[in-house]
Length: 197
Image 1: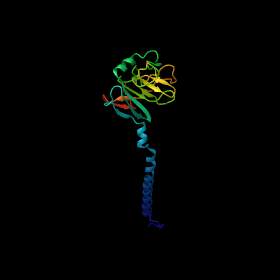
Image 2: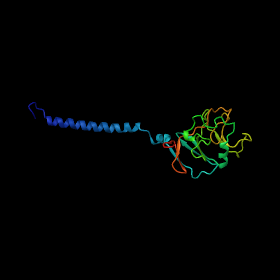
Image 3: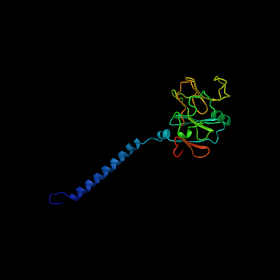
Image 4: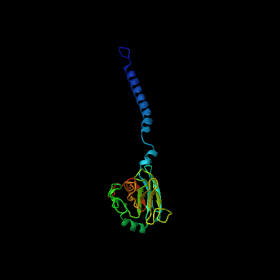
């Protein structure tokens, strides 16, 4: 003790101890709070890119995946379909895909990186309905010229097998091509096209 009757070393020890305990308590309290602000695994998965294996997809078959909560259709087209798409005819509204509904690397008659695979959001560009896939050989009343494609029953819009909209229907643009890239011959990453030119 000093002259004033106060033990300064004990006071310093108690002050330091109280500061350390208070700091530890504040840190322990803030960890759950900060953790609650980070997105959950489910939230991350909704917006994260999705890997899809195309190895089991046969010509003429379609696979449906989800990315960002939206349906993504993957269609493996036949050689006959590819020949038809190269000559779309006058009934297609935007045959050269000039409207910005696809990345630059899919701005071609097939609207894809690899011609045999169409990767497209399965949502009509009119009101966001989900069109039906109607193959040429399916039972339909879409006329004798129908070569297969997508039909939106809500307002009757037709899209060909490249997702291009037919003229004189309510949908204003072609179906949207999501960003994607191939990781191998049969593995595609939907939602990330970094490095694709």
